Structure formats: C-alpha cells, structure tokens
Amino acid sequence: GPGPYPVRALLTRRLASTHGVDEFLRVKLGEVGGRLVAVPMPRGAGVITSLVRADGILCIPREAEGLGEGSEVEIALLKERSAIRDTVVVTGSHDITLDLLGSSLAMIQPGRTLSTSNVGSLGGIMAIKRREAHLAGVHLMDEETGEYNVSYVRRYLPGQRAVLCHLARRQQGFLVAPGNPRGINSFRDLARPDVTFVNRQRGAGTRILLDYHLKREGIDPASIKGYEREEFTHLAVAASVAAGSADAGLGVLAAARALGLDFVPVAYEEFELLALEEEYRFEKVQRLIEVLRTPGFRAEVEALGGYDASDMGRETWVE
Image (cartoon, rainbow, N blue to C red; front, side):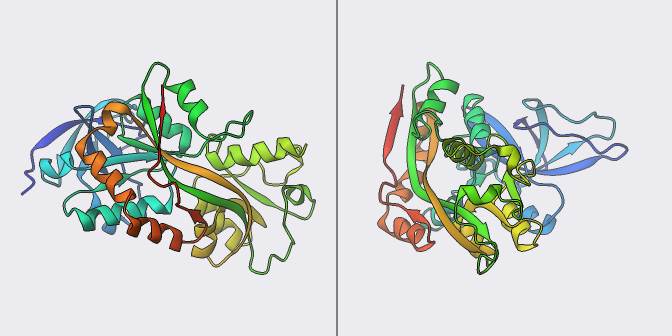
C-alpha cells in the first residue's frame, strides 16, 4: 500500500498559511516533465469526499509564512507512486466535458486518472509554460481577429512547438431567472439601469468574450451594474442569479441547467486542450486523446446540450 514515506513535489500555486496552527492540505499529484507536481485541492467544503480523491497530504507548519508558487514541498503519499505516474494533469479553464472525460478514461482504462484544477484559461497557459500540467483547457478569443487560442499560444509560448486539441464548440449565453423576467436578450440589455450583472474574473475566457462584445457594440463597461463583481466559475455565476443577487451572468448552458435557470444563447466559442509537443506525445496523454476520438464520448458530450463536438480531437499545431 501507499507507504507513509514522504515525497518531494513542486507546488503549483501560492498558499497562505493560517497562523498558529499546523495546517494539513490535500493535494493531487502528477508527474510532468520528469518532476512531481502538487496541485492543492480546495480548502473546506466537501473535505470527506475529497479525501477519497486526494493523492497526498501537505503540511504547512504553523511557523511558516505560507508557501510560494514553485516551491519544493514534502508530501505524505496516500496512493501508490505508480498510480501517480499514470495521472494526466489538466488545468486552465474548467468545463463539464473534462469531468466526463475523466470518468470515461477511468472506465475504459481502469487505474488511469485525470486530475483537474480550475485556474482560468490564461492561468492554464502559464502552467503549461512552467511545465506544471500536461494539458490546459483554453477558450481565449483574440479581440482583433475573433480567432480562438492560437495568438495567445504564440504570445505566451514563444519558440515552443505546441498543439491545440479541439474539445468542443461550446455555447455561451446569459444565465437568467426562470421565465427571463427582466427580458434580457442582448449585450445592450446589460447596461439597462434595472439590470444587475455578475461577471467572471479577469483573464477568464468568458470575461474576454464579454469585453469583445461590449467593445464591438460600443457599450461602456462602467455602465453595467455589477461589472466589477467577479466570480471564478460558471456555477458560482449561476448561483448568484439563482439566489437573486444578480439578474444575469454570462456562462454555459450546463451551469444554467444545473441550477434550473433559463439560458439565452449569444455566442459559440472554441474550447481546446493545449499541450507542449513533448508532453502531448506521452503515452498517458495519447490514451486520453484516444478517448476523445471515440464516437461514444462525442455522443455523450453532445447529449449534455450546448456543445458541438463535430471537430472533437482535431489538432492545430502552433510553432
């Protein structure tokens, strides 16, 4: 079984410490570029369930001032080292199709796992640059051309050979209360004085999509009540609308369905998986891409609603 022996790993993001107590944090582990990387799992909620999924435990000693991103830390393993070798680490923007992909992979190839963490599209590109993940979910629109992802990869990964593997075209729209009581049907409506909006964080693909449309229609972001209010996931945006603290947010159909909201489609976007060539060639990553190419998986994604999976698995190489 997993011995109590500690392993050294690279921390993928900064951790603040809670003073005066030794803190134990659950982490997911993966092997990227020959190094062990540790992705901290969310503190708090769902502790019991996530203990089942955690790969290891990290202790932040009470005297520590927290731990910096990229620092080397000691982890107590909860899993066999071989299981960690088989893990594919995915970061960046999150999408429900990634959860589906993880469960399909585990079914088709028992023992193989997908470890995901949500840091937004730009955060995902930076993680690939620092070699902290095998794949990153990205949906970043170039405001000049309306093209997705390629220009960002060129900008942030200069001199690298990278690949974008197409996951799905995904519908984005306004998440509104059932029956759309405020009659929100266009970006113009967001600037109405009787409408309160809830936004996504800077660097999120959804936020970039919003800004692109506001600019195109000459709408001043300052005229939108709630433009400054930031949430970090589609579900958190949906929850704000469901609770009535906002009239609308921009997000995906699945988030609207999850919380019984109405959905007004406004745009399709390209959601892709980014990898550096050498990580992409790994056998464990290729196994995952094989799952993407099965007709069964494609059908499952389209059944979710709000997705067009006809180009799933298409590769775009970026020099």
